Image (cartoon, rainbow, N blue to C red; front, side, top):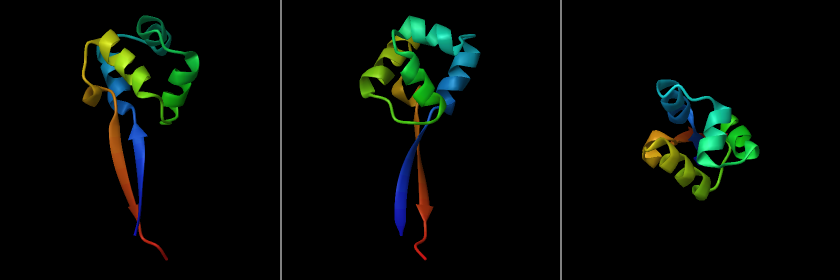
Length: 76
């Protein structure tokens, strides 16, 4: 059995809707790069430093920003 982990940022996008913040505003208030926002939009990995900046800017915990989704696939 092969196990792959995938980072999902859906919790962040929901939190941003709740706080009425768009991606450009997130970039500005968290002092993160446009590239980091683009990576998160594609559920790609970003540095823990970037996640911490977002948590600080939005006054939330890591669990409010990311989720690890485990996908299990059977080898054939």
